[in-house]
View: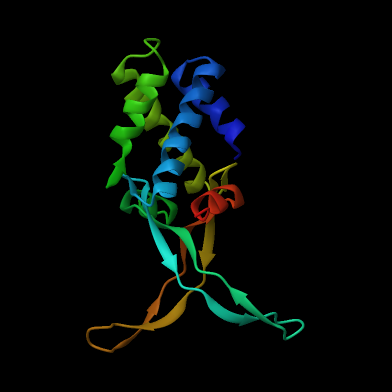
Length: 93
Length: 96
């Protein structure tokens, strides 16, 4: 499912216009993305939570050429699945 | 600080400029996550461009141990949800 399919499904389920559904999906993920960019924690009950993890830089190798490369420190979001979704995906509910 | 569903609802309510009530906003946000959960439950990936991709992966059965007693046990096959951050979000998170 892509973002546009999600928008269509949301419009249909809620009986709202595509435009309204598009705004809802965009605003939701913008709010979530901004939180992660700021480094905030993000929690959606029943779905999951996101935490920003800081990774140190390290010296790595290109496995093909063996060349040593510097891997810079980075920040990445880490997603932890919520209890409800975890169970549902695993067919426990 | 922790951003929650309430923040998303509040933001949607402001963006709607009177076209939606707050409870309508709450219901729409709730339904959106429900659609995503239902899709993942059906085993289908959800790709949100500019944010990331939620995928369902099947893990096969494996031998594990009870960490408390050390007893060996068989962990059954299961399905898990994974998230991969989009390149756009990743670079925005690492700008400074």
